[in-house]
Amino acid sequence: MTLCTAPTVSPLQLGDVHVWRVNLDVEARDLRFLLSSDEQVRAASYAFSDDRRRFVVARAALRRILAAYLHLSPREVSFEYGAAGKPTVRGVQFNASHCANLALVAVSTQPVGIDLEGVRPFPDALAVASSLFTKEASALLRATDARDRERVFFELWTQHEARVKATGRGLVGGQASPEEHTWPSVTWTPAEGFVASLVCETRSRLSVGEFDADVPPFGRLPASI
Image 1 (spheres, rainbow, N blue to C red):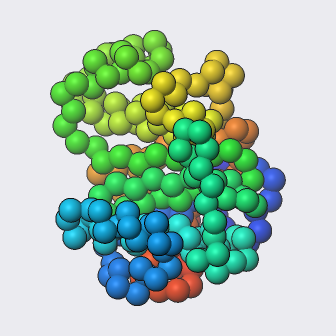
Image 2: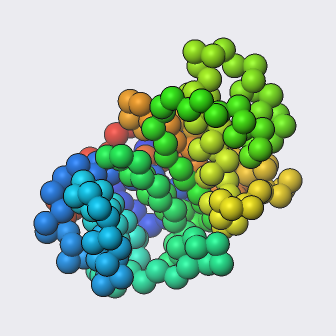
Image 3: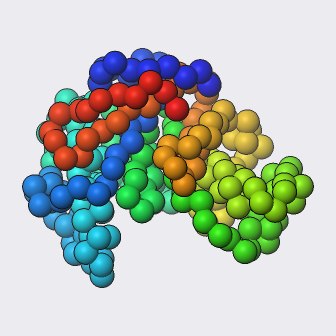
């Protein structure tokens, strides 16, 4: 993949992948009306207020981002769901992930998967790697210095999860085929303490922008990842 910047929201060209970074720690009071009735029910099911608020902000941001590409209002964005539960819309390919106060939304002309995790202690890293990752990835983790192992584990984990999300297989029994293991990927640090990976079907031009969930227009765009 090559990295470039996008000066504004523009029509996707063949091979483009636009990634939007969203801070979820903003007020949700004016965003709830953008959600569907089903999404509002999901929001109400969260036991903790921070989780409810972040869900509302993340879902509203996703709708607003997709609406900009589809030339719709956010409430007009209609999601369909595949057999493994992957959401899709007609007109663009997308995928999203959130963790704590951060969300990432990837939009493309081709199948794409994105995953975001916070780097944290994970005592079962080697055991999980041996059961889920390729032999090469498991060997890499075992050979990693213990001081760096948790970060490398989450780099490998986000690569694995982004790959099965890109293929639409889902995470349960969602091993990629040998061909799908050759799909290009990129891993980066979207914010301190986080790691993210993106996988898409072919080599792509990747742009990363900042979406301000607290105001209606699209926000500023940082240079690159």
